Each structure stands twice: as structure tokens, then as C-alpha cells.
Length: 421
Image 1 (cartoon, helix red, strand yellow):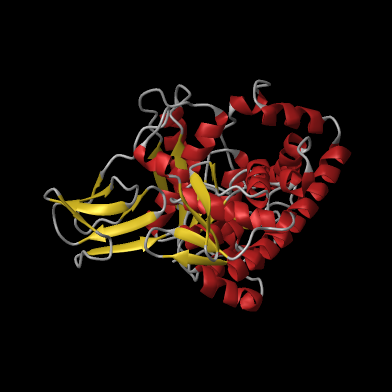
Image 2 (cartoon, rainbow, N blue to C red):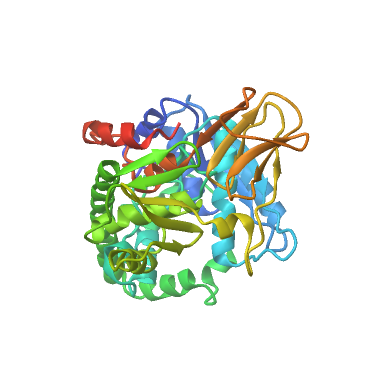
């Protein structure tokens, strides 16, 4: 039997990172993900392993491909879980939409099976392709490649989940040579060679120059490490500068950012206050800060508003994004089912133990509860639990994701910003 191309101890560490909970693996049915599944099962034959399979429901025959992947995963000793995406109405099925849908489905499936770590089979070649695609962007944020550990890139579905990439330093050719030696058979997705897609074009360029592939992968890894260090510094600034208002999920700031790293922390807080999946865009955040420094009383950005107050600044939800304005519909009420947790506006976690409640926006642009036509403030309903996720969201975007990192330096930050649990 051919020797495993990855240290089995490093693979077993994925279970330890999740506190010995089940490990989830994103499985497409292709050679890389099935090889990762086989490597994990060989490294730890008895620990719980789930294969999460997403049927994107875009190509003809996708359900059959998913079913075949499930059978192959089962033969490798993993429990398969299939999730099929639904494209209701006029929902776009482009690559970006498919990626968001895929990670939402993976996150929900991982939580259903009790996993907090999702292993994905990105290789050194994927790292090089990612870096080439992003190379035209300026700065380390744009050029950063993938990290061995990173937060699940969807919100709020990805809250508390970590992506692990144990194959980032392993080339695809070596991985697949090992897979063939194991007798693995896999599905080849024809979209991987379709030049209409940027990744397929990047793959074709790199296949013609293996040396370029290795150099780009190394550059992407270095840029990712640098970006992670800057995220940590941005998180420290946020923890020192921000306080969180538990009444409406607002952020109170003692001062404005003074440099690019602090601006990154500010952008994460703005994105969290707005309920955006990620940080606010850096250029928009920079323009907003410049306007406030020039004397503006308030500025809006991406669903958030930043206002001056007596002690500094407050970042909150833009009233127009809640009540509606031209081109933006008002936030619809959301019914609450007893015993079923729900997240409203991507910012507010709610759970009720009684019938008849709904969350709705008041005429003064505040979230509150409504029951039998009567308004009830969030802190006045004794049979409803409410928790704002603003701090948790900022920590999700900026926080250290390596479960083996020395977290002592972040204890104060975590206490200040809250927990991901």
C-alpha cells in the first residue's frame, strides 16, 4: 500500500480541534475530496466521520452525481449527508451564488451532525489558482490565499464553524497518484475545464508552467499569513476601542481608526452592525471615516449608520434599511416558533417558549416583539430569550481561527467581544 502523502498525526488533529466531536468533510465526488476522505479514515479508523455532499441542482444529472458520491463515501467508512440547493424564483446560479449556497448547506449540515470543523480538500494547486485569480487586486488583503484554518465564510449560518484545509501544501498530482494507488474512482466535473470560469482559465495557465504554480502558491500562503496577523491587530484595536450595546446591537466607539489596520477593524464592526456577511468594503469605510473626520454628523454605509455621540461614535443599523426606502423594501416581520431558535436581520438571535410572538421593526426603526397586536420590548418578554450577535460576528470575521494557536493574547479580546458559542 502506498504511503500516505500527509502526516496521519496532522489529520487526527482535526478531530482534536473540534473537541473530539464528529468531523465533517466537504465531498464533491471528485478525486481530491474522496482522497481526503480516504486519508482521514485511514488516519483514524474509529472516530466519527461525515461526508457532506452538496447537490447544486444546476447541471443535468447532479442528483445522480451526489448519490454516487454518497455511495463512494460510505464505502470509505464515512456517513454521507446530501443537501440539495433550491433556486427559488429568480435566484442567480452563477459561481458566487453557488459558492454561498454551498457553504450555507455545508454549515447547516455540519451543525446537524454535531461538527464544528469542516475539512475541505483544497490543495497547493487550488492555492495557486486562487492567488492567480486575485493577483490583480491591490494589497495583502486582496492577494491573500487560503489559510489552513479559517472561519466558515457565511453568516450567520457559519457562526462557530471552522474550515480546515489539511492539503494546502500537497500538489494535486501527488494526491491523485496516491488515490489511484488506493483504487479510488471519482467523478470528473466538466465545469473544471470550462474557460467561461475564471478558475478553469487559471488552471490552464498554471498547468503550462508548474514553476509558476509553486511560486504563486507560496506567495498566496505568505500573504494569507500576513493578512491573518493584521486581522489579529485589527481585532485588538476593536476590543480596545469598542463597547457593545445589548439593547439594539449597536457598537459604541471611543474613536475613529487612524491607519489601515485599524480601518480593517472598523470595517468589521460596521459590517457586523449592518448584518452583512463580511466586513464592509475598505474603500467605502475609508470614505466614511474621512467624512466623519471632516465634521459630518452621520454617515451610512451598506446598511449601517455611524453617528457622532457624546462619548465618540455609535455604529448602528441604518433606519432606512429597516423601514425601507427607494429600492430597499422594509424588513418583514418574522414569526417565532416555540422552542425553535431563529436569527433576525442576521444580527439578533431569538427563542421563545410561547405561541404567538413575532419579531418586527417598530416605527422608530427598532427591533421589538409583537404579540396579539401589542408591542413588547426585547428585554420585557419573560418567555423570550434574545441575544445580539454583533460582537460574535466581529470576532468571527477577525478572530484567530487556528485552534492550536496560543490564545492567551486573545483572552481579553474574547472577553470584550463576546463568544462564538
